[in-house]
Every structure is written in C-alpha cells, then in structure tokens.
Length: 218
Image (cartoon, rainbow, N blue to C red):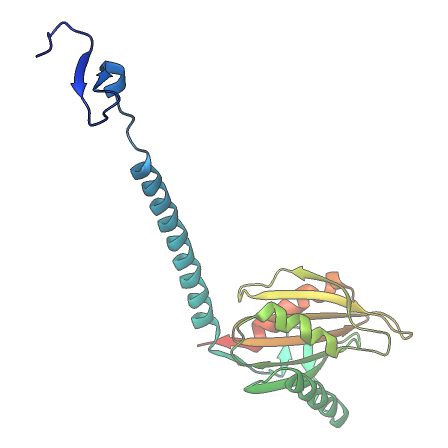
C-alpha cells in the first residue's frame, strides 16, 4: 500500500520486461476533449445559415405573391399626355406589343402612343405574366429596341417608384437623334417606353408617372 505522502506510486503491468510502471500526479492529469465545443459551433453555424436561407426564401415568396396579380391598362390621359388613337399610332402600338410578346410569353399585352402639347410622343408597350427573374427579362427586352444603330447603351438602374421591382433607362442613338428608352419589370409585369427627344432626366420621372397610371395590383 502506498503512503499518502508518497509523490509516486508503483503499479504492476502486464509487460514482462517492465514489471512496474511509475505514475504521478502530472501523468494522471487530463485535457478536456474539444469535440463537444467544436460540434456546438458547427451546429450553431448551420442553424444561422438555415434561418438566413429560410428568411430569404420567405421574402422572395412574398414578393412573387404580392406582385404577380397585376393589370396594365392604357388610360386616355396621363398627366399632360393624351392617348393617340389614330390609325398610324394604333398600328405602331400593335407592332411594339407583338414584338415584346414574341420575346417574352405574356398572358396579356398592351401598347399605346401618347402625345404631349409640345409634340413629343411617348411609345409605350408592355404586358403581364409571372416573371421569376424580372431584371434578367428586362435586360433582354431592351434588345428589341434597335434603331439600325445597335442596341440600347448606357443602361442604368433608376428609382422604380412605389410598385418596386426594377426600372432602368438607357439611350438608343440614331442619325435622327438620341432616344431615351426606359423599362420596368417586377414579378407580374414588364414594360418599355420610348421617349424621342427626351433626356434620361426627363424620361425617368415620366416613366414612373406612366407606371402609376397604367399598372394596378389586386
């Protein structure tokens, strides 16, 4: 039996070459395994990622649900603009909305030409459908505007207004002069408008005014 005051104790082992082993207080100390702490950190990280993913998915679902039930109409007047119902204007509007429908499968398409007192017209065309990637569809639709000089250049995002989604404006250049082109898209609608003889600073707020009068949600 070992003495209480003895700093070491001798114990027998199964090894024939070393019949005793020497143990002491330092040899008996143990370091707590870090496995539980590491596992806790990993599980916490996975939980944070899962919650973030669920939150993003819920936000996306909410946006789709609130934007998909959209209606577009072409009122006879929008601010200082009045609807041009001449045969030529109607034919132009029909052509533009047919071109957009060929690019994007729309449930319903609309088109109109509006005139102002200063004789600067606005050509509007758009439609409604469920869009999963509104910005991508909007970027593709700008390719429809080609005035024999190339596609719309200098596209940049502008304030989309109360309806949200995305709105962009750019410039189509031709020998007859520059023409600003603006468009919006959300999960329920997409539309473009051509603004001959107007700068982007003029066209962007006018596009928001058009949208407020043309688009409704249920």
